[in-house]
Amino acid sequence: MNEKLNIAVFIDYDNIEIGVKSTLGREFDVSLVLDALRERGDIVAKYAYGNWSRQHKATQQMAENAVQMVQRNPSPRGDKNGGDINLALDALEMAFTHSNVNAFAIVSGDSDFNPLVNKLKEYGKIVFVVGGKAFTSTILQKNCHEFIAYESLIEDAKPPARSSEAQESRARVRRGVRREDTVLDPVHALPLIERALRVLERRNVQPQLGLLKSTMLQLDARFDERAYGVRSFSELIEKLQAAGYLRVVGEGGQKRIETRVSELVRQLACPPDEALSILRRVIENHLRELAQGVMAEQLEAWMIEEAPELELRRYGFQQFNELLNYAQDKLLVRIEPDENGLRVYAGPELEDQLHELRLNKRARRAVGSRRKRRQEARSAQPSEMLSPSPSGAAR
Image 1 (cartoon, rainbow, N blue to C red):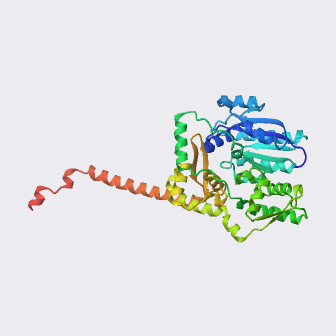
Image 2 (image 1 turned 90 degrees about the horizontal axis):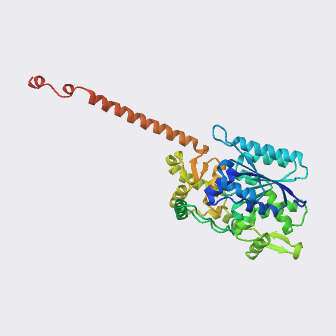
Image 3 (image 1 turned 180 degrees about the vertical axis):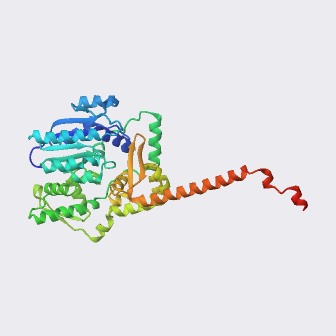
């Protein structure tokens, strides 16, 4: 990424807007995204795709930031796949016809854009993805050259203004059950640092700070030092050095990194799949409810009650919704965002249990129906057939 980057920005507005609103309780601010991209290169084109007839407030901020709005009309069935296709085709057309554009930014959390990311990378383009860690597919996060988390862009922003008492009430409910976003222990960065150092060693390259970070981003585009409570990569390295996990050799721009990772460190950084198994246990306890869908806050409340031992940050998650997002990519759950938040359903991984649940429900319904028919049949019989006749009693 040493050459000057000319970036074309393509915004899936409907997706990013509802994702930010449902997981962060904020209105999407396109200027934050554009400012972050300007730190990485020159923005030469900006397009946003949405149903603008329903987004009057958003059109103003798009106009103020000189973003070209492309109307996305929903299909007769109400889905937006046609709009996604238009965005992908326009991006590919720009890749073919504008040789000066060497980088693309896809602002969306939709995993349907993975084929577009793959194709742009095939054509030698740098690809950024901007989205929320809690609603952007983890596959999409890892598939680009750099993932820019929207959460990191609003760290210094003021709390969002609530537009109604109902919204404030929902916010209070969420604060009551949701664990606050946590700062990750820097120890979680060490496995990735180790991998990057091994790559540089195989290339016979000195592991200087800037090169180390760029190699880490190549290996995992989701890496962001701010998740560890620091402002810069050098500050993260200083923290790890002070804790005795790293040794920094050299001065100034010639600093080189060496690791001192112990088995204890690997034990402290638990693999995320272990958290997934705990989540699965809780989901199976409430499978009947998740078959119909529950709000993410309710599922988190069950987690806090039934698995109090779960510390999200030990598994590399800053908030519960990030764990849910990871679980969706593993097919354990299905998430549908709406204006009230995230609604969670049992995923395809639990289809056998769901099928058994449906069969049991039908069986109970059939038994109840037969019992009701018998009761109705008894009540329909003549009263004289239900009691002995006087003559019979005399005999």
